[in-house]
Amino acid sequence: MKFNIKEEHLIIKPYKAEGGVYVREQKGFYQKIRRNIGCLLMMMFIVMPWIQFNGQQAILFDVVSQEFRIFAVTFWPQDFILLAGVLMAAAFALFFITTWLGRVWCGYVCPQTIWTLAYVWIEHRTEGTRNQRIALDKAPWTINKISRKSLKHICWLLMSLFTATTFISYFVPVVEFYRGLFSFALNGTVTFWVFFFAVCTHVNAGWMREHLCIHFCPYSRFQSAMFDKNTFMVAYDSKRGENRAPRKRKDDPKSLGLGDCVDCNLCVDVCPAGIDIRNGIQYECINCGLCIDACDQTMEKFNYAKGLISYTSEQALAGKETNRLNIKLVSYACLTLIFSALLVVAIDSRIPLEANVIRDRTALYRVNFEGVVENTFTLKILNKSQVPLHFDLNVEALTDTELTLNLPKKVLIGAGVMQEIPITLAVDGYELKKKITHFNFIIQAIEQPDITLKKSSVFFRN
Image (cartoon, rainbow, N blue to C red; front, side, top):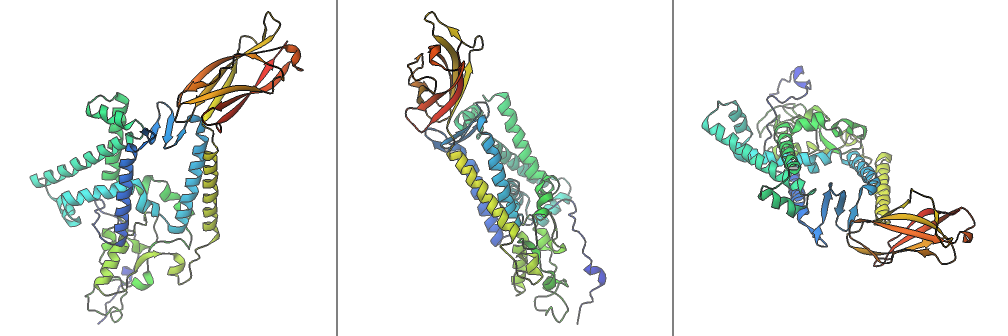
């Protein structure tokens, strides 16, 4: 006996979730990887603000003081050019991963995905399985429904507040922040941002979920420019799966004219984006692999070979060999390495010292009672290191004879402190060949002689 497959059954229609996406809880290989990565990244997010380095918070982005500290390196607004290098290296790394493995960033490490996974986990524990949640939403408001919904939202709000406070502790010293939080002594600005990020977390992970990924995230729109026929992505093998139809486990699909897909719809039920992967490649797919786990589970029950839905490429689905070292993939990899190397070199060669020379604006020069020409300067020195340093000040390329000057020695400047130092240089005008002489101030840290900076200026005479 064969099934009579009507023509309309072969028409592929885009899947649309009715009444929202109810994600079915799924176990399996890829779900285990997602949860382990999510737990690891979430623990790192929570723990990192508490890590101490050299007696201070290791990671702190102090916007008020304009000081951005990452372990042994402190960045200042003057170093923001390095941010362009970070963004370029990160962009090419994302292009490389997307060309190679599709949207695995979205499926495994995107904060939106990780927090949504945590919120869905809470939803499962408070409202029940997928079918129970659907039934609960359709049911009239009773004490049971109100209590379950209230418990879910209380847990969500507590998680949102915890996420917000943890995030703010990257921008406000963590001990100072939590001391003010528990004593209700936070200032209005910090309090506003705590509640702002708590609301954003609650709305994004609790309510918007897949809508944010599909409609607001620009990555889902421009990813297709990086995909090619060799990109590994989650895909359904229609040649093997069609024609799809329910059947008993003992039925022989070939004798019934059927493919391996039993049309159980589990791949749709577990999808966090609410799509049907059997409709072909879709930009909404975040490559999380949940549909693979669900399908493999069904294939195992029917004693079919796994992999009806799998990480594969268009080339492999067409029966061709996947070219893993194509020119686009190699180019993105090389550009990622080049920009990463340039960024490391730029950070390593960076001098943690900033200085500016300001001339006296009231007079270019003056001649004292001895007939010596004087020029007055103000030297602004910023110690960009994380420890106090003594600095030695010298002058280069002005004159070979001895200068009469008030250059201080062993100037102590604290970590992250900018200090103004008034300087007067006095030179016999006949020692200078030109009316305008270029020279350099040399600033050198005594404790760390490799921290040396030259700042050019000019000396005027009559």
